[in-house]
Image 1 (cartoon, rainbow, N blue to C red):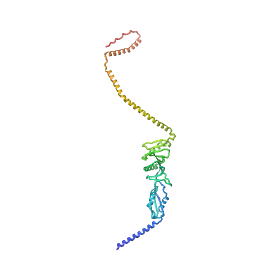
Image 2 (image 1 turned 120 degrees about the vertical axis):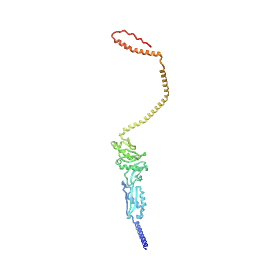
Image 3 (image 1 turned 90 degrees about the vertical axis):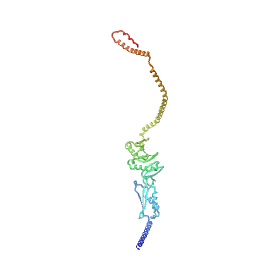
Image 4 (image 1 turned 60 degrees about the vertical axis):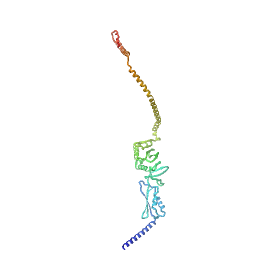
Length: 351
């Protein structure tokens, strides 16, 4: 009996609780929506692409009866997330019947001008159009930039914005012929960086060039400064700068000589090749002639001298000696004071 009484008591309380709950829900759903609160999530850089008035107008259009029970929260969240400038949206109701909307806006990493159209790109690489009511101050990028390059380009812009030196010098990025150039605020030159790899080293190289060299010169002297190569900086002179006229003229003259030098080199190569071919043709003939001469010298040197030839050579040698001795004898005769009779000539015996 006691158990039946307990079960009956529990059933009565559940029925009463259900009745009260349904009554409160019905009353809550029929309650007018008194307040709509729009909370904009704070970001690193404040943005104002979405206005609270626009969000409230969207809520009113999705709930024309202005009753709490007629609000479709999942549908409202979906509509808010479909807005181009919204990164994420969260919609919920309080027990008081107040509607709360937490909205996080997209923060542009850079502004891209591509094919004659301007739009923003955030850090995640998402595109969204420009607002008519608000313009966000960010880096301008021009050229045929692919979607796969958005994140690396956003990292480059972030590094420039966080560095005081880079932020002072660079005001834009342009893509030309597959490579990237940084546009500077000082001078008319571009800083060529090539691809988006090793950006830190490239910016550091340009910084050292400016501090050690460019500070002492005018910025208009150069039209391009390239830092895309490893451990070297290549500069291009500005032809419209007066001080560069003499240097450019000399450079043009040197460039004009290059075709003539190349032509002379080709002629010298041809001439040397023709000499080599003729020398190769004459080699066997020269060898034959030299061989004949060697044989003749050998035969002449091998021949023995005869006896009369030996006598002739001895007589010739003695006569030469006598002729050499004669002038000495005449000189001695002149210097002598006493006259002496001439000595008889010596007889030469021939063996």
